[in-house]
Length: 265
Image (tube, rainbow, N blue to C red):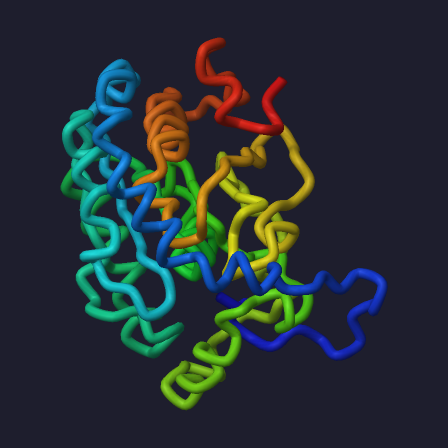
């Protein structure tokens, strides 16, 4: 998914990144389905993830997706003991007036009902929404986890979904959208960017930013359509949600699972 407003045409050409290879795009559905079908094989070791502390978790879908796309992810989080909610806004058609008005209200309601800041997980375009919620209401957001979210996109060609996004641009709240530069700025709460070099929809380079005391990037090996069912991603999400509020410790997978995370030595 592209950023909310078109990037500047003056972007340095040397910084542009090409889209994912066509073969990755064409195999996205099959690879995503394979990850879903093989997920039960991971149940034994996924049962060992840290239990939740009951805080609220808001999960946001990607472009053209609905809450049904995050059913497995939300079910997994719910079984850990968190109070998890979908976005309840139907199909994600982009940053419409309804999305910009209702998401902050949903965040505030969940924080109020659970008695504290909320973790926000966003898949693809949903991750850009998650970061912007945290930027505007940092007191209500405990942690942000983005799944293949191109918040650092510098050129539309980095996204295979750009055409789908633009076809719906007439629905978007143009006067209220942040620029590409604003979207790419770091946020002031703990955040983890999950990305995959096997992503066939968006260039993985657009899904990360320099690491800092508050931010980390973690690589997994799944399709863009597989983030919500990929066992390595599910373990990572559980691990990050279990970090106590106000703390930010770097992700360190257990030794037997290190091979699942290419950038974790």
